[in-house]
Length: 261
Image 1 (cartoon, rainbow, N blue to C red):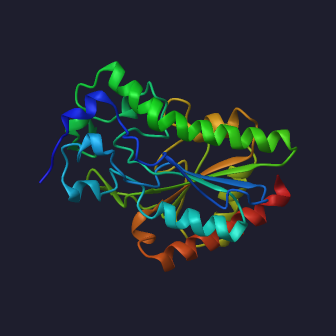
Image 2: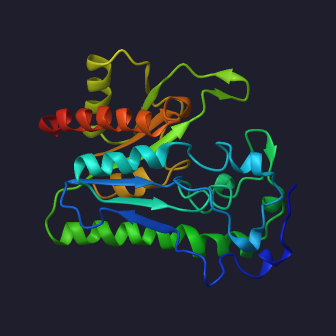
């Protein structure tokens, strides 16, 4: 059963629905600042189920499965602020530029998203204004405050990926993603390859770019911050215990990389 609420044309979020941003350890003093853009799979009431089944809305197309659990545990281990985003990336992808075609995907992993077909520029703009910009403006303001206070910042974004994509298996267990950063990302990549037996991807299964990403290029690289995007295969973080183990491993890698920054 699925539905597509026609009132979506008149707005995205209702007054009682929560702000896109959810924070954890917001006032923590760590040099690390963590972002999880695909943490949630909430759908605004005005969009109904976007024409999708509950099964589809539970799949990876809607959110990064397990990423929030890892990010929260990493936040606690490092004593670091964590900024997460509640709404499904099917509503709007908060790790894409708002003018990117995949910002409101009409198809995701072969699944048609009825609510995103033939969207007008105004409808796309409303989703950006009510979800994307409130989230990223809050991140920008937090980073601005840290800079004004003279605090160091190392930016870490946490994501997950599917073990199989469009029928093709992915061997990587973790991916270290980067673009211009020549500090934190290479140090993390080197640490994981030297200290674990994991299959570690360098810009695999994705690569960061200005055209396909937002958080690392804008919040990290434009500010000249050491930054890294970490992707974990979601079949490895299906339980809280597994998420805790991965958070511990990532924390150890980050701390070991600090002398190289």
